[in-house]
Length: 103
Image (cartoon, rainbow, N blue to C red):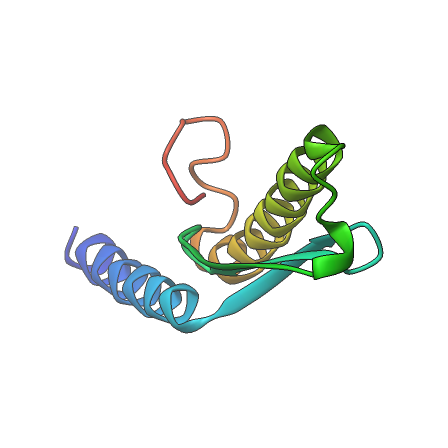
């Protein structure tokens, strides 16, 4: 029982370390060949959105909206992949089907 508690405590420390690394990490998503770029933390917080002036057409706002959405989705996918890379080895696949956030 004591061994299980030690393993659980070690895993908890590893999860905390991985979460700290994710919080410090940044990922970028882009769309339109770089016309729109989104910077996001490894925890999924959007830090900035950059829009190249070439992407701004008052007659076609829908395209710009689509580019922003695509860039956010691209950054979110990068963030998910980073999370899997950081948390997967720590959890050994635990939580995958359990609905535990970040796993």
